[in-house]
Image (cartoon, rainbow, N blue to C red; front, side):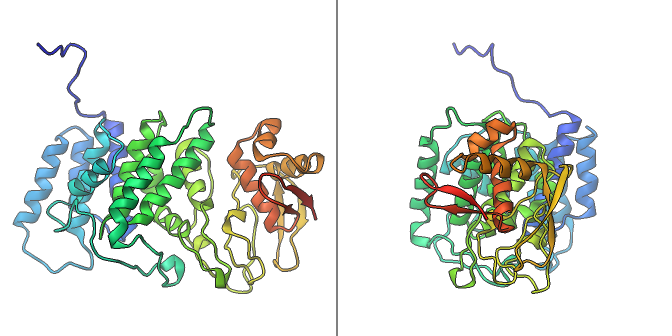
Length: 382
């Protein structure tokens, strides 16, 4: 006999959770420039209010498009957005997960079955995609011949990684890095970002993170652009891959920070008369003179106290206000040029990610400079 006493059949989530799941599911369609229909919204509301189950909601949507006269709506792809949104809502409600390439592929199959012929199939052709944030350039994705091997390798590396003794901030940064690498493989011809988002939300829950799905709903397009920037290099133009924007997104997602997430800040070029504020993420190439990676960009919490005004280098045509966190970091570096980011964080009761963003801002402002390697070098105040 199998002892089922300690097992429970999962039921419908509560109204608040249903609302958040639908909000996220609908918002994630923005990663591919899609928009759901008014009919989908009405069906979602019925499910949120408890009038119908999620399975009934999916049946309504399926029957709606079965009865609807065929239209050539390739440009809007509304049917895809509606069906995938309903499926994401269902999957986010499930308390099930397996950290494996098979689970990742299974999510794609479930989301896009009946929509793409290649649903749940790893691509066997090379791809490129013009990105708005890169002014028409493309990220270099994994070659078709190495997709499966690369996928297996990244999962093996992440599975073997030891998260013990890491702070929650360090864990978040590590998972953001894994997310970036997973997305860059681009295992599927379409639907890669939505699949990755669903997988990562469920993965984060296994760490005990109370994932605020609303960030994915409200900033889905920023999330995708941040993944693009984390995987694009152009040394000739002074542009380097940077995870800073993805870190900002995850800081908001996991720790409730209020970093301002604006897509225009991710574009790789700006006009020469643009100004820079070190409290807002900036571009890699301001006036072609600031060639540091966008890891130098920062966005401390909106309500940080302003302590004093410090002029930026003449190459950057604006004055920037230094936040209290940046002041603390600058003072700590002055006291001990060899202090690590973690030591500065512990001594000043601030998070490691805040210290890193403050250091990035101070570098952009030309106030500090790293001399030597990351491990054995030190900071110099300019």
